[in-house]
Image 1: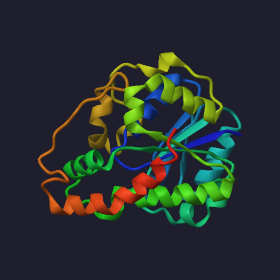
Image 2: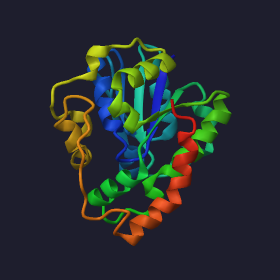
Image 3: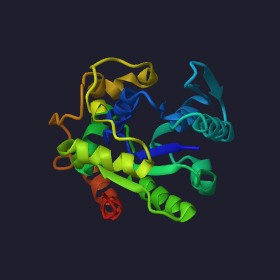
Image 4: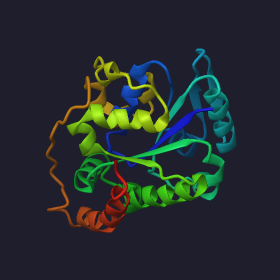
Length: 239
């Protein structure tokens, strides 16, 4: 049974990584199921055989992922906009999963998140939740989860993705590092958050400027100062 989880904060390039996993064609890809459960009460998962199955509880979701992972590898990408109670309360239920984390410089992340959602709160920025989950899963599994830096992914996608594949037990498929720019059904729930990846055809650095940053907005600066220690603590373990 192979279920590979990638735990991300929003605006971390995790959706671009998921797009690469879709391009592979040899894994079942599940996009932000716990976010869907939390905000909508249910999530519909597209399975490898073409069926779709709707689940409405954490236990149903875990059972479905586990069962699907017996047929072929499953890749689950999740953002930590919420502190999902079942996940944090029962990390042992996820001990059989392969756990990875993707982390981006908080200065860019915070400005980007605020541009998308001006009502964002400090907990939603996600680094504290990421580091807490990292420690919980390390303890539950007995092995250190893989940590990928988004900047490293942009600078050297071949090496970074190869390391991910080595860790997760998947074959490295260099042809999956590029794809056709297109919309995807997986992104329709929150399409506005995924416009960059819809227009992308690979891991590409596209520098952006934002009117509000940690340099000129005191609220964003307070977010940065709070979350920076958690970012630094998890990045100590980055490959």
